[in-house]
Length: 258
Image (cartoon, rainbow, N blue to C red; front, side, top):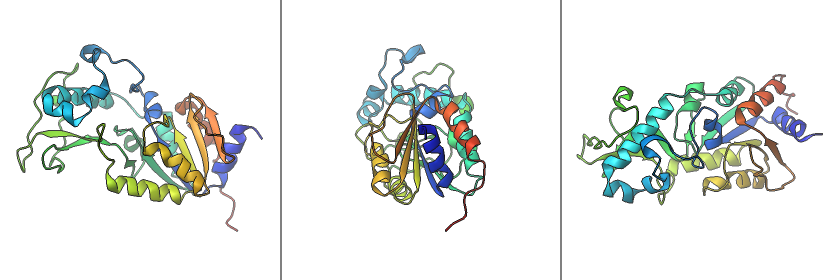
């Protein structure tokens, strides 16, 4: 069998499927990955210099403005065919779960439920001082078109500055999200890794965990990220092309349980 046929066979026979997604799936919606150069007033910045607690302490207005701009970029995009294919697979007899490294809400807008966000979310800020989430979400209409420097709003509980509720460099993953992700991966029949670099730890270890737990792993990526394991399949291409193809090929019923 070809690799695509092997991947389809693994998906066809899986009852518990975990999609593990990274920047590559959102790139097809127009959200740039970290490998792409920034544009506009942010062209001279490196995201890695803006996404730290140290940067926020030194210049909260700069970091807050950066995230306002990122939130605007996300608001202007739509879920692509890959996000929609994942959501539609949940209508089959399979148990579909989504774990994402992305901080956008494209999976939710596509219709996926209970998405595990390993690196947090742009949707709701939290307090830099007391770490409690904001009582209300930000007004999207107040976000500037080209980004600018804005002082962060204050926490209504302790008057600390609000910060994005995302995982910055040097910070740990949210414990509850990580625990949920590990449990889903250990319990799945198939993990489909979509658009992940395989670099950012500890999330990058989830495919290894799936293989060690007896599951098959399908990688969907524009570059080869496979590790050469027997139950591992590498599908080269854009997520928005590959995942709809897989969906079409599994629209027959699951085989009966034995």
